[in-house]
Image (tube, rainbow, N blue to C red; front, side):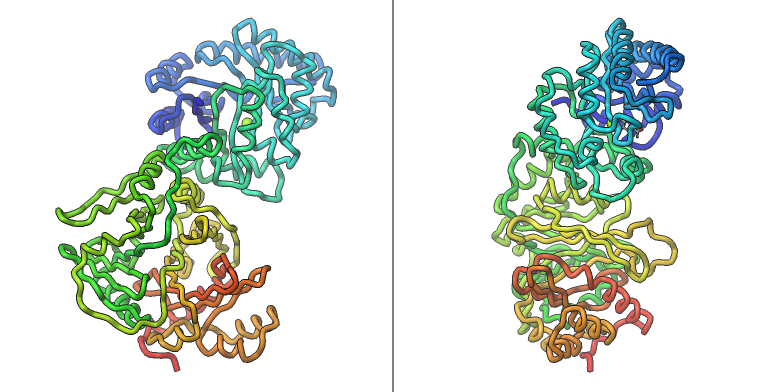
Length: 603
Ligand SMILES: O=C(O)c1ccc(O)c(O)c1
Ligand SMILES: [Mg+2]
């Protein structure tokens, strides 16, 4: 299907927007009137610019407050339309979007609305233009798609049809199934937007919080299927009003938008290489420097890791404990703090995983491989983290020379999940990236009040929960005062017996306040002995509605930014203990104020 994007989706001048849309591979655009009005390009110039870029102008929009008005206003509206049709002719665009009136002058009279729209369609038809009538969810008298359809049927004019916008339809919680029964050929245009499920004024929701398909809560595949069932064969066109996208790099936003359409089309009619099974994390890599490196090494030792491998050619160390693999890379220079610079996922078919990633426009990570080293292809995630894709066979380990070092370990088995704080501007992009590229599905999105700001956390997991990822973001761009929300990252390890693990650690873990345990006992009605055991080791606790339990334990922040977690999941607990994030953050802050980290066992 043709792919189109409204100029309102991206930032910049009209030319910035056109350039970005073309570069991302869109076939067409919707011209938002405001973007034309502020452009120094004449309509004819815009037309030739679009032609040069290979873009069709699919829609001119919006034409507002037209229908169901008293005669003198109607006359003026028709004259206004005549002028816009002239502009459209110069642009070479043949469909105009007319959105349902919000004007106090409009009356609640379907017959009048139909009669006036018929007159508009007559005028348009004379210029070869079609009018697509859209019910705004906050329209004064017409706010549902079925109401707009009744009016279009009443008007009964070949140049008048419907514009369906998924936001206006799906924000109303009405059943959209009837869309499939719309007369073939009468859906003139289809606009697609997703959105998070919010309870707020629908106009504010629409103007600030729309998202690209796959980034919110709406069932876009089903919506598109219904329109296709009604014979729609025009473009799939994105119309997303979003505060973040409006001020982000348009080239990047356009790629995010294109990825959403590719994934949406694949959901409707699978055509991309399918997701190979991912069996877990092969390793997580930290970029360290001369000051953070020693701190991380000491922590790993305290957690029962051994430095088992040294890279053949690079200043890169492999630390292992059972199937938990941590790579410390001193060759990647990142200023200031230790960072999770990469992680590797084990795929049943790495080549196919990478084909899928490429089809979804995931940027390839430049491969800096020496001759003889394992093929380790990577893509770059929206936050800049490299995502390596390996086979199930650990071939990548051959790049490391065995040091011969072994230690008994502390019962850590594998990487349970990664926690990656996302840049504010790329949180929704990241969710779609991991979903469409790696097949991770959001389990839940939680918000919590942390000591230094409100946080949002999205838990993602693949089928079978073999690969889990927690994405977090502060709800507002971070200000000057926000030490503990400074984009922390962590690696979490799974143990089958957290009490045995805690006893085996040789590391000062976070000190958790008594108030927390008193509250825990009260909230969950836990036995005193159990709470005392948790308290003794600084173990945090959460329980889900089905009785699944999470017991988890944290290190302080290491190397300025990162920390480790140990988790024991009981009874199918699938989330990440987000409820405990505020106490963890406060404890990490206290530890930092108390003067850093001491590597002695807690008393
Ligand atoms: O928010 C608006 O006014 C507006 C305008 C045009 C549209 O197509 C739309 O869906 C919303
Ligand atoms: Mg719309």
